[in-house]
Structure formats: C-alpha cells, structure tokens
Amino acid sequence: MRPAVFLISLMLLLSMVSIKSHASLAAKEKLSPMLQKQLNFNQSDALSVLVYLRGKADLSRSAQLKSKQEKGAFVYKTLKSVALRAQAPFLKWLSGQKITYQRFYIVNMVALFDVNAEAILQISKRSGSKLSKMEEVTSVQALV
Image (cartoon, rainbow, N blue to C red; front, top):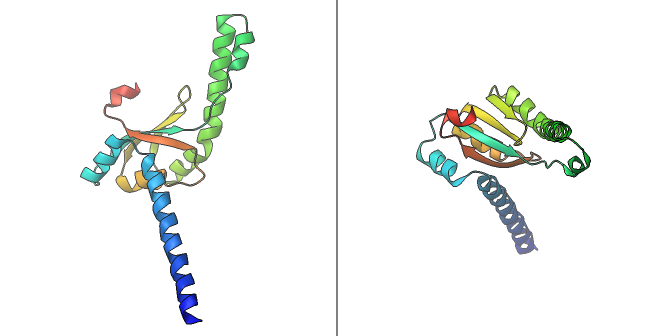
C-alpha cells in the first residue's frame, strides 16, 4: 500500500511542477525576443516597455455612417471605449505598484516607464490579465 501512496504523491508533485513551468513559459512568450534578451543581459536596469492588451473593437457599424467626420468620431469613440475597459484593472494594479505609465487608445496599449526586471516578469505572469505582449521601448521619441 505504501508504494502506491508514494507513486501517487510523486505523480501529483510532478504535475504541479509541469503546470508551474507551463505557466512560466506562457508568461515568457508574452515578452518580445528583444525584451527577453535585455532582461537576461542586465536585470538591474530600469526599462521602458510597451504593454499591448487584448480587446478588439467592432467597427463594422462605421460603414453605415455617411460622413468621414461621423465615421472618424465613431471609430475613435469605440476604440477608446474598448481600451478603457481593457486597461482599467491593469492600470489600477500599476497605480498600486507606483509604476509610471501612459495609456493609448487607438492601439490598446500602455507605456510603462522605469520598470525593473522583477516588475516586468510579474506583469507578464498576471493571470486574468488581458495582456497580449510586451516589448521594450528603444526611444522615448517613439511615444511622442
């Protein structure tokens, strides 16, 4: 009877290790290759990163609108609404972590400034997050 208990315990332990490594792998896949390299090279540097979030706007109704002005206003309002909903829980978490950010609406993303490696990895592992991918900002002018 004891060997059976040992085998079951061992199988449970191995499955837990497998689940944890799979979650870690999934989190790493969200990081761009360039960002992964930067994190591996120098973990003490503070980086600026772009965090892209999931959330797709349904813009099909814009085809029914007459003027370019109406279409533009509809597209802007819809994209902003989707981004606001997708970003809200993430921005609340960032504020709690005292991480400086700038939000964007047309592209559903958030720029993070002076973020350390530990925070980047923590963000990539957030469950329930609408995080799609993260990449390093190579120039602040790219955001202007």
